[in-house]
Image (cartoon, rainbow, N blue to C red; front, side):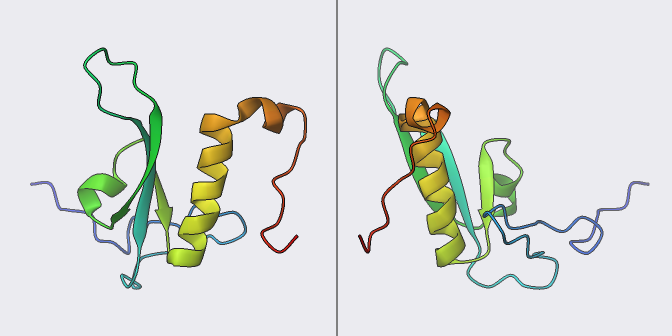
Length: 101
């Protein structure tokens, strides 16, 4: 008989830069960030960054990034936007301007 893994045996980790908090016992305010292709008939629509409330099903998808709260979700969204929409600027080392500048 196969025993299900507990959340403590396989905890999720926040994917935001500099975070890494484990979700094992902290289930409040966790979000899933993913980049997917927008629906289109031809299948070549633009990418979209999507933020969802946590579900274990979404968390298991390979395209999912796990965020322990809104601040970390925003960091992940910024990272995904740069990778998906402006990859040339990443390769040249161009940084995103701060909102306070």
